[in-house]
Amino acid sequence: MVKKDKGAWAWVPVLYFTQGLPYVLVVTVSVIMYKQLGVSNEDIGLYTSLLYLPWVLKPLWSPFVDLKSTKRKWFLSMQLLIAIALLGVALTIPTNMFFVSTMACFWMAAFASATNDIASDGYYMLGLTEKRQSFFVGMRSTFYRLAMVTGEGLIVVLAGYLENKYGDNSQAWSTTMTAAAFLMLIMTVANFFVTPKYESSSAIATEKPKGFLEVFASFFQKPGIGIALAFILTFRLGESQLVKMAAPFLLDTADKGGLGYSTEQLGTIFGTAGVIFLSIGGILGGILISRDGLKKWMLPMVLSLNVPNILYALLAVTQTTNIFAVTATVVLEKFGYGFGFAAFLMYLIHIADGKAKTSHYAIATGFMALGMMIPGMISGFMQKWLGYDGFFIWVVIAALPALLLLKFIEYPADFGKKTTNED
Image (cartoon, rainbow, N blue to C red; front, side):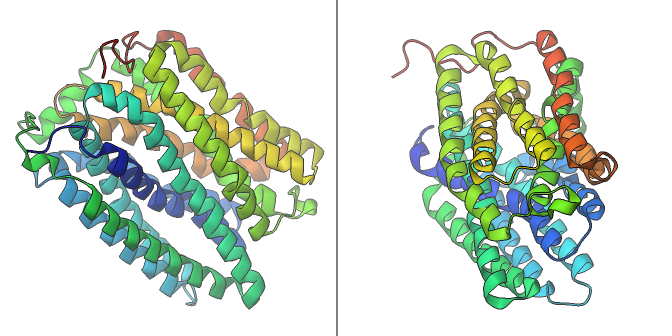
């Protein structure tokens, strides 16, 4: 019999690294790739933001994941499909219709990744006790973000190196995406070996929802759900726009308001100091929530997510290309994200608590994705209208709605806090 919490030190890092990797490739690395392949900022912001749509719509098929087969079978099959889709991106980059064809492959990867999220998050909540869910949230967040920095860092560094080697961005990115597909395949195999079969054990006892409509109805009947959804939609309002235009800002030339960094420089900054401080922020956030509860740390963590955006505004206004200033900005932004996002994850788990928690968590994260998609779609147009300096000032202002909603949200004061008798 497989008991809850078994092997969590092994499978939580591997599972959430694998969850983060396709996400960053689809919604972030695609931005850098298209920028280096000559696509405009407006098209980048609009079309790569539309790739969030599967994460927005995933609640529509999350009950099916809840009702059919096991979470483990679902995430393993979806991870394999993602690897195939990424290989499709690699093979279609050199074609004449590369934008349409690569977007189609990214769409396939996005739908598979969103389904993988449903199954992985359900597995996390089924396989861990509530106390361990709060304890591992920092590690979960950290390895998810490590995957994202692997994409923004190591994979982008590889692309930059190959750009210089080949003198052909198309060939460089085709090779890079082939390597990314191979990495995804390796992680799928790793998950096959490290994840226990919890749902085949009597240690897991869950009450399945009666039907599709009941899942949705019960979610929207939760107390205080209106304020909760408003908070979820605005929590990442600034970040959703910054994440789309940060890389174009660093890559664009000075005459366009950018800093003129190379692809390799960009990847190196994200993949070195960014990795270290992201890890520190995520682990620290999980430990503090586990020790003191979510309520105490929510405000500091919301601030940590948004205050570093001021540094991007300063870079844009001054147009300094000083490597230390740029690296410090990225370091503080990554630390703040790792620290602040731990609180958001625990809040989403709280919202999903109860029957059909897998589906309810998918619905909550669907609204989170909607809060990323819509602002991201207009980010390129906002940047063109305001310039990079005005755009990043706007990003700072966009943090205000979430801060104003903080005093209205409700959650147990000790949510996520370890009990004193925990082993």
